[in-house]
Image (cartoon, rainbow, N blue to C red; front, top):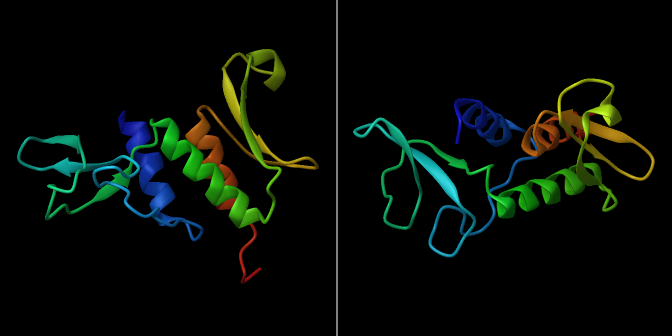
Length: 129
């Protein structure tokens, strides 16, 4: 994962709507990563990775993106929400972008699917509002 991906993953974990899926970071579960201070690099988390200070979802994995879409749908109480990437002309700029929306509204946009899903999760209505 890139440094930008790491920051996006940290932002997901900090969101009010965040929830770890069962088995994430364990053998057979959704992939996660952790920072190995001794090797000074991120490694994939497994059941053998005890004592991990910070574990983050691997937002580059399609299975994790599916979990993130589930969290967005749950936060918005809308099962019609989808994530789509499109060519630049669809977004009135020159960058390839991703967009998250439902049948009646758009709720997030970003340069990557993960960033668009993060924007949608952060914009979701909360129980307090």
